[in-house]
Image (cartoon, rainbow, N blue to C red; front, side, top):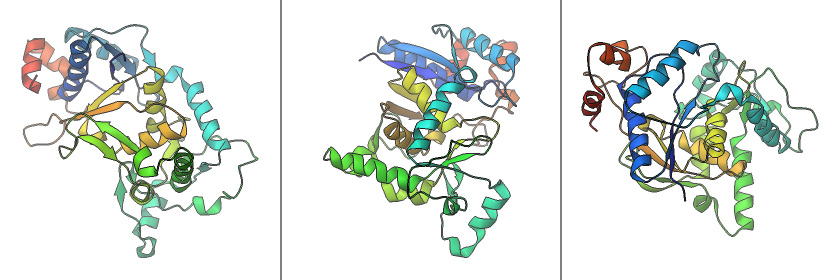
Length: 302
């Protein structure tokens, strides 16, 4: 099997040391395994994406000594692919429109009778306000709505996966899992088993189509990784919990599940993870101050 890694930044600000670590780690893995390193631009948020930040990404990564094939995949050019995937999930009766805003969700979750966990990998666990207004007894006859966010009915999704698994003499615990080759948030490695009940109560009905975007990070990253043939996803430990969402979508859309390497996060002197607003640790700042790519490698522990 061909070994393929990727680095997928968003052009919404300068790359910092954490990005450098993730990109170089993925690049090194590909080199060590005679594989390929791919670059992808995650620019579905057109309200924040900027051409000059995208150009800076290319400049910074080239300066670090990384190479990748062109043309580069850009999410903004793949919107039709995301729409087709939403259509597939819609006709299966797994999606529903949601009109709740953040204030509505926070108010519903704060009510004692809801009994839901407060936060999951996608933020506040949605309490199902709009789900209760939707008829899931039969496949939808109306077209997929546009303009409103669309959520995945996680309970129905798990049931669908479970039923498919039973037909193949698997149970959901065996079928829903992924291979963790990195460090995980608590040094978790090996086969990570996902439980249906935890997905329903601890993750909930995640948004797969956001207002103004027509897709979401979770849906886009799953489709992009599959279309690029990624075999090893290298990314930070902060995305470890989100991987369970991605595994669910991979099963529903009949896509392969790559191995995952969730690496440690690069932090500042106070122990906080770096953010794009932390310009003092931007790669371009180190370049301007006379650092070399070897200096960057030493700074991030490579």
